[in-house]
Amino acid sequence: MKVENTQVQMRKGILEFCILEIISRGEVYASDMLDELTAAKMIVVEGTLYPLLTRLKNAGLLEYSWVESTSGPPRKYYRLTAIGKTFLEQLRQTWLEVVASIEHITQKNKAS
Image (cartoon, rainbow, N blue to C red; front, top):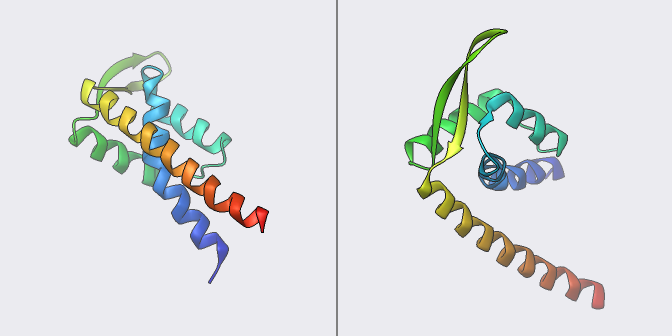
C-alpha cells in the first residue's frame, strides 16, 4: 500500500469543505480557487474542480454570475447561497470535532 494513495483520499475528503471556505469570502473565479488550493498544497486540476462546482450548484449550495472580461470571454464567479452558508457552518463544526478527535488519538500515542 502506498502512502500517496491515502494522502490523496484524505485531500479529496476535505476538498469540498475547502472550496466552500474559499467561496465564503465573496465571489470567486474558478482559476483563483485553483491557485489558492495549489498554494495550500491541495493538488487539484480543472477536471476535478469543475464537476465539483457543478454538483455543489445543483445541490443549491452555490450560485454564479457571468461577468464580462476585458481580456477574453466572460468569467463565471461563484458565491454561496443561504443554504450553502448554513451547510458550511455545519461542515465547520464537523471539522472542529474531527480535529479534536484526531488530536485526542494522536496525543495518546505521544503519551505512551
